[in-house]
Image (tube, rainbow, N blue to C red; front, side, top):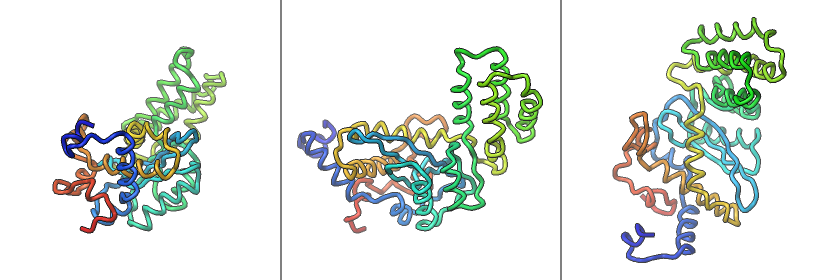
Length: 292
């Protein structure tokens, strides 16, 4: 409110602000349109994920595709369901409308994501998020109830998931396989089954130098967007939610990082993707009705 007053000399009420945001969001370009105009130089690693967002008492899913190197948003959608149709539609837009094909895609263990990726990007390697798998193991074998034997198993699993080479990974996997009869409880067996079932997809990142073994960046971006959209629960129309989400994603893409631990401070996701944003007013640029 104070910033608006300094810039405009007026003190708008919350209803007026909501109307401005909704109108700006309604006219805001989506990431596909911006990619065609700005030509971001994304890297070769794409992360995909989804998260439930509550809107007016109902559940919708924010589905996101991210360039993991620049942390820029490649594409997104807000859907009623998280399934093969929703995932494949998002990926088809990326491939067919802007021609982007990554060398590797990082996701969780949702079979619908696997199917959608194989359908749209046949032959592109998939990396299963190791942190997601570790959460599964911790849920099966909670730390507060873990036995000494289970602690040893968890250590071997972590050594496999976070190995520095494929050889090291499979040394630890082989130890789990040869010793699996030592763990007879149901929780341990479930954890072992998870690792053995997905071991190939959990080591894909070794095939693509410079790629990622986890999807933390994608999850972090979703969390940031969710924080911006806490007020979304009060929206009564899905279109109003879509408008605000479109605007929030655009703002994120143009905003410099302020607390990054990886040397990205002062640069926005679009700037990290090679786009010179120094002369662009993001609000003016974002509007579809503005001719440039």
